[in-house]
Length: 222
Image 1: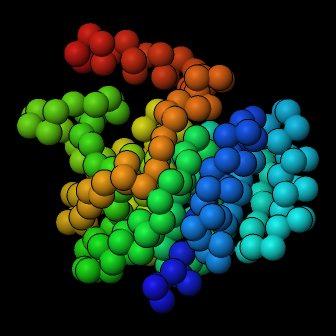
Image 2: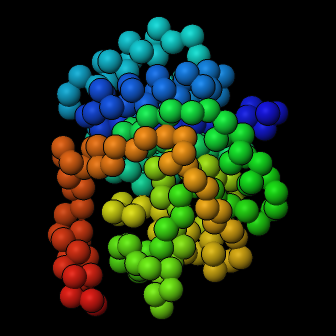
């Protein structure tokens, strides 16, 4: 599909080279020509060395950014958007494995259907603190999980930045909906296997006291 030339894929790693390498290989199996931006988010293990060797040996369009410290997932996603000028960005979690091709083409088709279409991926609903709720709950906020999502860069730049948070896209997407942009649900689970918490199960969220406070307030219903 011609629009693929306007896509940059992004995978962010923090000390899980084994998972990220699997994600890269599975993505390249179906999409060898889409530019791929890898961001190592301040890993203290051998991830950076392994990525440097991987990129050096790569025959596909692959770029590597090495952050000296862990800026966290949301800010690293914003970093990727600032780094590229592509019309569309495809974010793929490091603990994903692509099992079937064709999803990028379908997601692009959905986004290009209207100027108001902003992001496509697995839609869920969150409360203001970033915890899952039912669609019909009074404070439900539409949210596309950044597990494997495609967005329009031009619209993103008009909205709040992705942030250091357990749900890093929440403020951005809440404002997007307020401004009339559309978040489009897509059955990405038909195309990928998502291990879930691949990085956080090993290292946690590192959100500090604010994260713990947010969790407590949500448990109290506040």
